[in-house]
Amino acid sequence: MKLNSMNLIWNTFNSNEKKQFYLLIFLMIIYSILQALGVVSILPFIYVLTNPDVIYENSILIFIKDFLSINDDQTFLIILALFSFFALLLANLSALYLMYITEVFYTSYGARLSHTLFDTYLKQNYVFFLKYDSTQLLKNTTEEIDRYIGGVILPIIKILNKSFLLIILICIMFYASIKITLIALIIFVPGYALIYSLFRKQLVRAGQEVETTIALRHKLINLALRSIKEVKLFNSESYWSKKYFIQSKNRGNLFIKSKVLGQSPQYIFETFAYGGLLLIMTIFISVDSKTDILPSLALFGFASYKLAPSVSQIYSSYVKTTFHWDVLLNISNHLNYNFINYETKKHNDFKIATESNLEFKSEIKIVNLSFKYNINEDNIFENLNLIIKKNENIGIIGESGIGKTTLIDILLGLVQDYAGSLLIDNKEINKNNLSLWQKKIGYVPQNIYLTNESLKRNIAFSIDEKEIDETRVKECIKLAELQSIVRSHDLETEFGDGGSRLSGGQRQRIAIARALYKNPEILVFDEATNALDSDTSNKIIESIKKISNNKTIIFISHDTKNLDFCDKVYSINNKKLEILRN
Image (cartoon, rainbow, N blue to C red; front, side, top):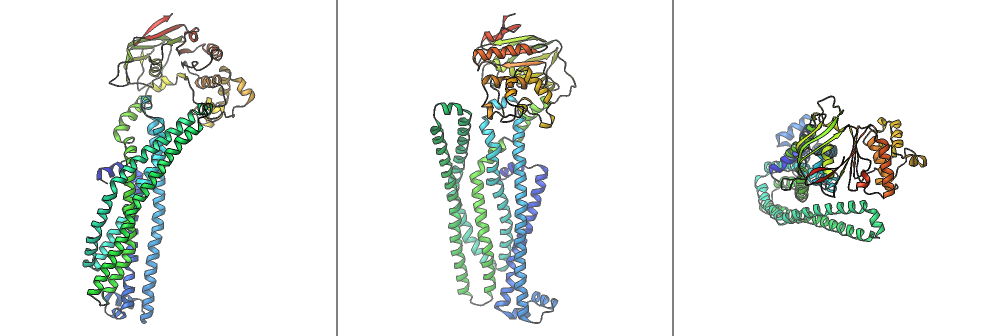
């Protein structure tokens, strides 16, 4: 675990969490001191028990006896036993309190980190989501955060905690007997290092395999549930179930492997350590049979009772962090300074409206637009130009993959990294007015995603319940001709995830109602009728005609029949727009 790796973790803490972590370290030190006190407290009791005359020879014991005005040696021995008991009790109470503080820290930290990651994703520009698999982003904000907390943060806290205790106990052992402590360290440290080196590479490999298996499981679930209609139609439930079972079994086997690899060295070392301790004690007793050495050996025995679990926990925690270290690197890559600074900051700056007003009275103009998604690709557009007059109905046609949706994304302000200009009444759209521009637009996609919530909440999308204007919702229902749904249900009716209990035409009408809710000046339809049958498509087109008064309509399609109502129709050819009908 290198220092730069620890910096990755430290950089994920906010200022308040850093303070809490410092407090946690302070409490760990107090806990370690109290635990050591519990160990040392047995020493006076053993000394007096094995040699009562030491009461009158040791200056500290004489002072305590006189201070407490105890004349009876037996009573003094009981007092020493009670002192040892209460020292151990205090140490264990401190352990409970430290455990509580640790739980509070990592729980709140995990919740905050998950929210930060989710918030970071939401603030990326639109192109970011074209590059990343949504399943991976979902896994990062949920399961990967849990793995990070349980597999990296908690083990590191345990390593720090037990390391403080280990250092203090070793210092006490050196004070008691330098010779015994040095022999013990010479025997145990190289042995532990050898055991760890034999298992480390296998643990790293197992951790990487688990990461891959978890990603595959998420992808399988996502694919199967999003294609549930086809799964049912093709009777392929057993196919998906089998694939999921295989990945789940692989995941389980890998966790078993990691558990066995992680725990085996602990049991090997404990056996090795216990045998070594017995050997050391036997050697010293055979060399020096005087009772003076018995208290020291008793101290070492009691210290070993605390040391052995601490060393084992440090090792098993280190093993756990090794196994899960890949998840830290993954999360760090999505939270590091460059990632947030380049993507999020750029996008957020573009969303800050420093202008108070943006009027659309005359025309939308695209001037000399050139664009490509990646440096190594050819341009999708080259010096493309377009003028759309206010309240004009514009149709854009072109074959699949030619750039119709990309052009719309640029008009919507979702894609900003282009050459050329987007002008509204000769005012360029930039970071100072983008959000004002987007407020003027209603968007109807080809495939709307409906949440498993009420009709009202699906129309008033991303608006708090208490802020929903029900009057406006009803107006939008009327404009989108959704009365048939409301007659048989009500505004609170839910229609299943993705609107599974609705027809394609009904879902598209809800999409239109959603686009109309904020009363936009411009309505953009991106292949909005392409997935519908001709009869339903014609009805949707008729509804669009009715709401086109005092609205600027931009309608994308690959079927010219859907564009009969448009004032102008353009075709995308040779990376430019050509007028088909004026």
